[in-house]
Length: 72
Image (cartoon, rainbow, N blue to C red; front, side):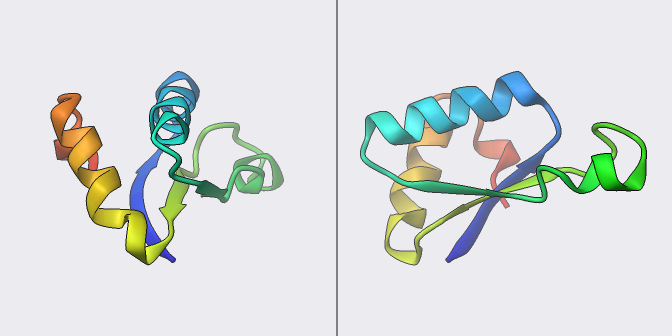
């Protein structure tokens, strides 16, 4: 498993999930509930993870969509 990006922008994360799923890339969102536990919604960024073998393809899709600067 490899980290693809981090963000606390809910709409952007939803778009990333839709983009990658449309290409049969499974994502795993980590830390989604951590900011609630810390008491400040959105303070902790969510990590978007993909399988090691999907990382390069996922990265390329985000670059082609103009979001390559967000990739870790």
